[in-house]
Image (cartoon, rainbow, N blue to C red):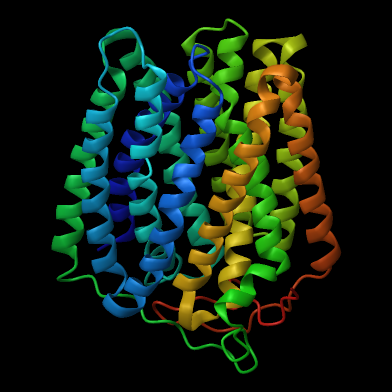
Length: 416
């Protein structure tokens, strides 16, 4: 399957998923509901993602990446239908009990995403003809962020025009996942799993660390700080915008700006091909600046939400792709799915922890709650700068074999 075809189907799926997420965030961000509902939503995501990631990594090693993606897409389609049933209300908004049910049922979707996520990243990062793992992750980030750009306007339209926006968005998302399931099942007959490229002598594969020891690496710790600061912050944006008596369109525009600037940043970075350490530092710095800008929203209002969204959005693909590539490099070329699984599990745990700690502070602090999260991003930036001080040696000259990842994507001498 040509990568552009795979990319387009992924874009369609992520657009529908983004519309569903925005509708759920807006419904659970209702000020009539306790802030703890959002924390339960993230804890449910943790409880769903961790088992999914662990099982997904094992399934990828045993059954292959393509078959694992088929299964995960099918489960995600079923989970969307379950969300639609749980979110159906009488038209007066979700009650606290119903909102908690939705938050818990939503754990099935993260399980499916976690199950297929390691295979997705491993397959995308080593697609036939790939010259750089980081560049492939950036290209994948472009379609993901474009989906997040198109999804919020669709969600805003549903909120304004239909009586049950969450169930409608969830059913539409289920249809796209069923389509992706059929497409991937058909492609499985012709698209073989990409074999791991041969690693250079002395490279990461020959000095591969046990998967549990990856959790202590600088790249994983920085990824945890990045996820805690970025994802936890975006979780409470809807509630804080509603608390400021702003309409749904402000939230929709802010989320779209985040996604659009993320797509632009990913496209620029893919062309520049900066080293992973520099991409990570730039992404974490932009994240801290964006969160500080959001902290001024109580004074500046709508412009602060939009400007902060632009900075936060630009940070996302840079930090995510660079840190994920570093972790996958430490796992070794022979087990890319394990490195991706460690990153996903760490990010999910960090977000669940952050949402639990931040929830009681949202109401008393308002937008100022973003300041401590900006500090977390700054600490992660300082850690990366201290540990990754030098660029890796340039990759050896010569053509890259089909399906291989060049040394630029997996530098052999990357320090932890």
